[in-house]
Length: 275
Image 1 (cartoon, one colour):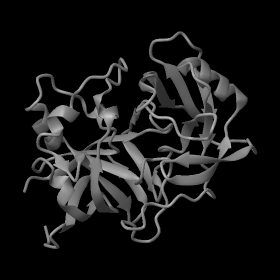
Image 2 (spheres, rainbow, N blue to C red; image 1 turned 180 degrees about the vertical axis):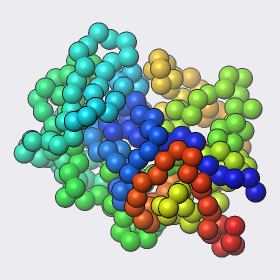
Image 3 (cartoon, rainbow, N blue to C red; image 1 turned 120 degrees about the vertical axis):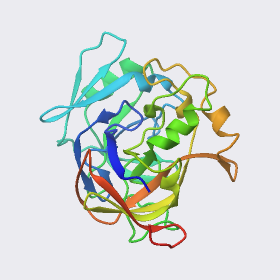
């Protein structure tokens, strides 16, 4: 078996907005540091994503010394600064899929900026540490918490999995269509779906279930234009129980720092055999 190496590392601080490529990150229980701790909601407190608002792809987030900086890739809008530490005391209940948890409204300034940027009334909220959202108990090990991610704290995809998909497409797609946290080189396509426990560097992870993909994968992250791919092609060979699978959802069994170049060591495969 070829050496498995962490080759790319991403966070998406504001759910469904542009991701940030990192060289190192801190692994926390809910996900990587800053990952999906912020989210846009509609007037009813329900989460917004590119599934309904493809233009969210055009909002790019970057890390600054004291917070996030959000810019629009095509509109001439001033950058928005979002502090890491919110001073807001305005809380409300927000909805992410079937979950309801509480969050803080970041600021009236942020609400106005995003409303102008997207052309719909929306608000920016932040998940504090005392807001509890649990992963699906059917896949939990120790009642793990999760941020505003769709369901799990981490997502991993092998570069060979994308290479295999791209070999079937007329036009190859970049990894950002799939919004992973971890990308690795080595191994065979879809190896990641067979890992139960494994380490990235010194941090232990557990593979819960393959990731069912939605129409966000069809949205060009640079233009917000949608197409039929890759779902059309993936559905011909990656369909399970009516869902298209690509990538593996994870929970963390320990915390710590990971960096590009870290070795990945599989400790237990899905069959229970030692790898």
